[in-house]
Image (cartoon, helix red, strand yellow):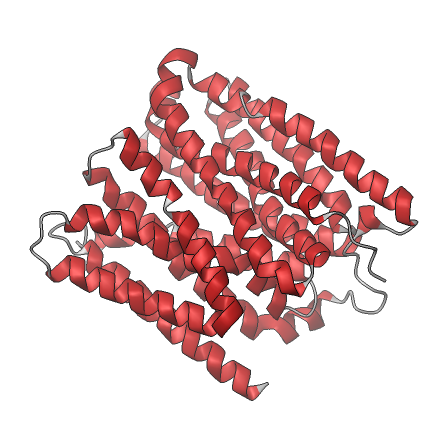
Length: 388
């Protein structure tokens, strides 16, 4: 039995704020890589281990907490995730040596991986299918926490120091935890149903093995889509290090995701997910080939600022689409597909360097190849739709 719906706006803002500060701390850790290495005297291998721990943590958090959310209820586990997040970030701000830094980095990353899947699935259930893509895209605007991290690193780090940059997110998240508790508790008391346990699996449907066998094909499609599209964003982050880092450029680089997300929602409503992905893929290939073959001096800046808008299309629709394709264990499978995709995508800068594509404008060939991969996935979705 599904509980009566909670107010969509209230659900959205609690989910958005939680994800926003999760993204803030995730990207802040990336920006502070050299600062932390100097503070703790880290070797290159230790710095790499910290970054890999962050990637591994989001995958483990999506799987572990996602499973618990599907079994015990998303409302309850959302609150537990905030507790893990608060401990992780507080520990980062107080870290005294490399092992403590590594441990609290893992805790904070577990929370981010869990928060994405649980928030999207819970919101999807509350707003209904007609509004799910719009709300999912709006929820993905939480990635602008990365913009806050970029600005804090540039302007507040010299004044506050790195510890206070982590600690700054503790107060809003603690307040948000209390607000989320009140919202869920009031909903449970008001309707007499298990809002606090919303999403709990019905009796007889909780067998994990059969669920995985039934969902492995859509899981692979979602994993491939997340890996390729997130890799496109990471390639751009890697690429823009060569460009001027003015405040205006930093803001535009992050904010340009927004029109892409809204465009994706518009295309999905009129033509469906497959057309939105195919359009994104064709535009990415065209942009990449133009930047690669053109002699225009401004092509690199144009590529760096246009690509976020394109990437906003798949980034904005994944939360709703992933929830749509899984029949059971939706929190775990959707969150795992997205966050494991993040892990695979995290190796794209290493692959670019290994292939020698980081020189001579050959980034653009790599992004064109990513576009071709998404185009093939859109064809795979079409074939899967015909079979069903």
